[in-house]
Image (tube, rainbow, N blue to C red; front, side):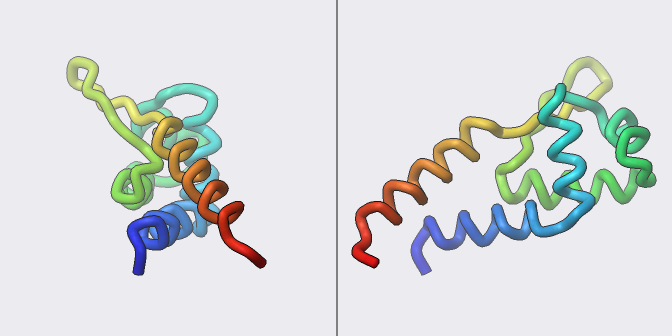
Length: 95
């Protein structure tokens, strides 16, 4: 399996869950802490943390520490790069 296929599979796993997709929608508006995300998506913090772990493993989300808080945000550069690579790859194929 090519590296692109592996990355697309990870992206699919990250986006393939309704709760994770909702978390990404929250993060598209602004970087947020687990507590802030938890309130907006109405899920317990441990559940949000587990979903963020999957999203982070898929490189869809990145985090930065700000004092004692951890802010999560969408990894826009990775997503754009992955989609650009996929588009280029598909346009070079003869279907």
